[in-house]
Image 1: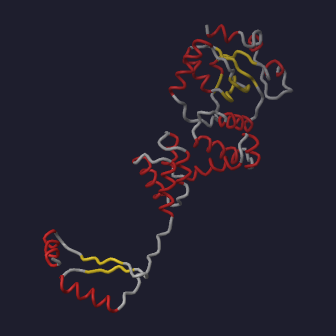
Image 2: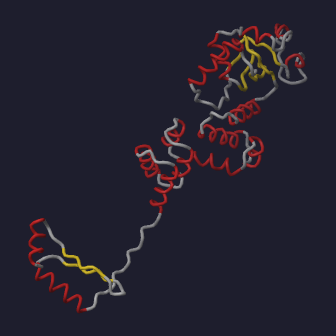
Image 3: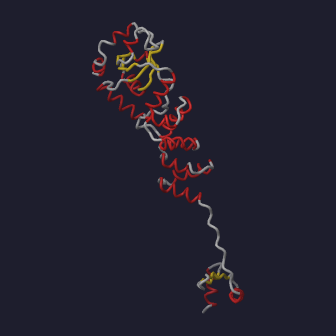
Length: 292
């Protein structure tokens, strides 16, 4: 079943691996027998990628892959490099894990030459291309390419096929508090929410907004509106127009007669309100009788 399908890949080449030449460069003896070929490799001889940028593997997706491999076999070969003690995985860790769960002994693999830096770069770039990768993992991969491979953002843009603005938006997510970054990774909020929250410099305020977004199930647009209201400077209080003296005298007289606080709001056009305060229903009833 699964093994039969896999054995068709690279038929005849598996026999060449019995001697397993040590291949570190294209000039090494036996390189032509391994490099650039798809061969069946013993799963026990493959080490996981020490530069694997991915830390989260979706359990459901892995289970689906296990079911697929148990029926159809490994359709897409993994990519490895030859090392002294066997092979080291460059890409395809989920396929390798699923094959181990199914119980396969070998897996089809494409063998290529790569030094440590090239291996890291290939793993990072391949990782970025995955559709199920969360925004923070993508951002971390971009940052590692900039820091460890020493790429410029322009070079990074060409390597991953993304415009610089998109890359910059991902990188900015790393300025968020780690708790908020975890929220994005766990699907509590979206990248859009994170981009909106970045506009707030105060980390404590970021967390308050984050908690409110989750508690009130705010959309990205509602979050953006909330942040605009927070950042908007308090509106300056409009200076009250000075009341004419006869108004002041009238307010004082009404206040004394009603034994209540009285306020007059008056616009420049002469329109306004007369406000008489009361302390309770009983006090209101007293005022009502006063004006009967």
